[in-house]
Image 1 (cartoon, rainbow, N blue to C red):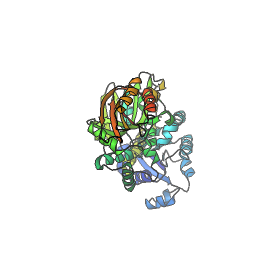
Image 2: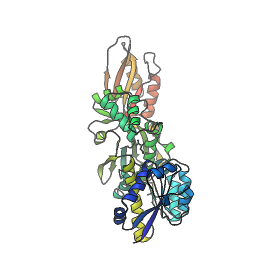
Image 3: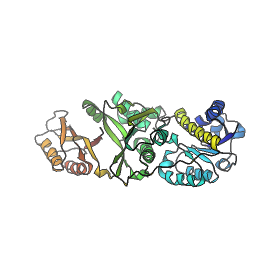
Image 4: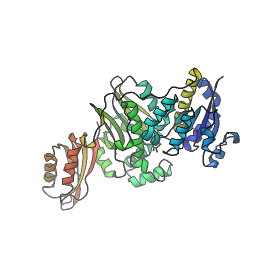
Length: 430
Ligand code: HSE
């Protein structure tokens, strides 16, 4: 039987799962891949990790270079995350003719184009299934199963930590702070959860999905991003009364020759399939010209779900090596006529608005006349409490309006003397 040798750099949560599975299930993985797949070298800068994983001493490298330069290694698996030194490790391994498997969403989102070009020139492939939504095979499905489609829309719950926080707030009526503490206690959120709750992680994943769905390389800075940090429980409760849940969505939408890319808290109808995605689970809803609507659902993170996707990439590449001696590079499709990323100001959306205003005659008239001047039409309005002369919330749903007009209107409204706090604005998705 032919043989494929694998080297792994990074033995954290995912790397640990990958190396143990490859060792423990070697026979079955090799059988399914049709070629013997063996781990021959691993490295982590924290030497305790290899020991804790009971990795045979002979497989442990003393530095990353030993793995990158090992001529016997066919596939290098990079699982350290972040931009550097991951980028140098991958480029070094590609230059040595190795195929790559990675779960590194920040790197693929930021430098995927450059890495795929290098890989293509050198005839190597890069597997990155685990970079988006853990065990959910969305990369493969967009790249293979749905490849005949023109994708019109995708939106995803792609950050498990924020979905856990929002689900917990909705279920237990607790604050964002308490829900975050619980996520941290369960080991979901990082000690510094910035990337999760401020939308950065979802933005990286959206860049990768956009590349696959719309054939457009997008840098994280081109995506409009708003996280969940400012979300208040009362908005979840008011939204619920009107038949909506609030989810952090990563949205990619084709509007003629431009592409909307945005990550933000969103009101979604409570009976939409995607609102059934609770806790740390992930899902991606996709609309294509041939498939109609489809939703992929599953575990978005964690040791074994992410390891499952990493190993499936290793097996794919191994299978190709077994069949043809090599594995063909990942090829991005043409941009399908998408010329630009839409400006968020050009977005046309319905909105949820919560004003905090003094309860006195004429307030609603003042607010609605400013909205009217900016061509924003009100669909529903409700004043939540009656406290004459004191501040009360007024909650509103609007018809479709332009984001730039909404910005203009809210700027004026928030300066009115009877408006006592910055107005909360949440976009609505059908
Ligand atoms: N931190 C991510 C999440 C998991 O909460 O979904 C890794 O992508």
